[in-house]
Length: 400
Image (cartoon, rainbow, N blue to C red; front, side, top):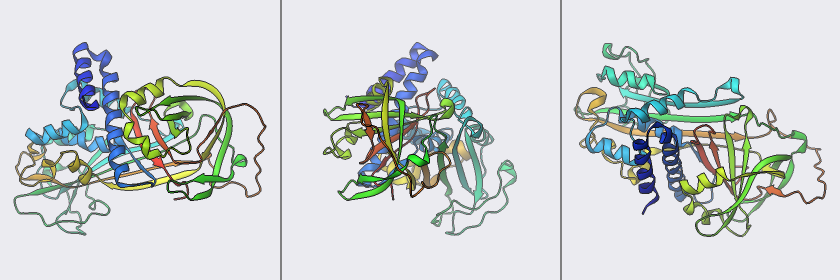
């Protein structure tokens, strides 16, 4: 039985058992969604860095569910694994988004979604209210019929909107007279302070073996610390090491997944990741004193969600003739013309942009185990209270 179907069954059972099990069911579904995104992106980016935010991708799909009907709504529910039309799911997710970490908690997290609507399109007051209530979302009128269209003042029927330009990188396409366009732009960024900071003076250039063989000298951070760590097997029997590095205030943790055997490519691990495996790994870690080596890296990229969602069977949404988004404006012919997602993550010593050129790293010879991320590894940023994966990606070359 496909993992997603198993998870859907578990979530349905949780609904029947009551609110106490809702968190566990949604955590499994959102983790499965995160891994499906990861595997879709990894398949098209052989051996390169990337990071994508499952939360940033699910956010606009959740908003669209407020206005989607018929097969369009069903395709969105199938992609997400749940629907916000369920009041329990809706209330729970709203609470989660309302309690995301802010700057005062030692972390900076931005999760936002802008919906650019063809100017002059009447919008349902109910839909406008839902969007304004859902996470950090906004409706922006724009002229989407021209490649460099400029926005015009909002119509009287959507007075809550503010005028703005179309989304960055918007290509534009001439819309038919009977069609109104909607463009989605979601963003997710995170930067936090480690609970135990790396010292810049302990950073030095060390070798990192990239996915396709070249060995580079990269700035490698180091600390000796009490960490959560475990060694596990994936479904194919590959041994992996999993390390958790928490951020200040316990607002999130960065998990690193590294093949134990240097001869096992990361591509042999990726296809076997499931929500059940991730849950087992993150809940089975044990405290251990270790030497931790982690390269500094920064990843920022943009994705065309339209192509990813199309490959998942979400097709009606982007078809002017098939899209059923009557809940947005009460009209036929309303469709999504573009969906763009931006994500970035930065991992470095707190406040340090570069290490001293003369810094020396002195290691005592001991039997303390070592976690050394000197070859491609998987990262995922996880919120501890809900278990939701907010970002997931791959580091194949820290210098890219």
